[in-house]
Amino acid sequence: MTVRRLNHEEKTQACELAWRVFSRFEAPEYPPEGVEEFRRFLDDRAFISRMPMYGAFDGGRLVGMLAMREPRHISLFFVEADCQGRGVGRRLFERMKRDYAKQVFTVHSAPRAVGFYRRLGFAPLGEERVSNGIRYVPMRYGEE
Image (cartoon, rainbow, N blue to C red; front, side, top):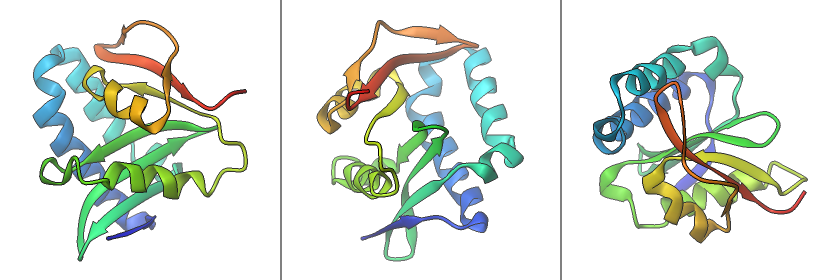
């Protein structure tokens, strides 16, 4: 498996992966407003193009992606269903961390991903919240 930063052209493929996984696992538990909000976010190509994005490749197939928003916020983090539980997410996270001197990160975790983030070392900062139909638990990795 190869894990590396994605180039501009590969970001479209990564957003398609994010949509596929979101649609399968998250969208069924979201109100229509949340699904539409997530789709709008992925379709904002100008914003997406500015985010550092990482991909995990199994052979030539993109099987996982992670995107960062400034200053150190995980904005998108998805692994194909058939590759979950195989360490793909951990490898993406470890690769991303190498690009940041300050090892403090935040994420708005989907409720079903809280356990995964806890295993990476994140801690919840509060209870589940909803914003524009998007359900999340605010979490942080590292100390300020």
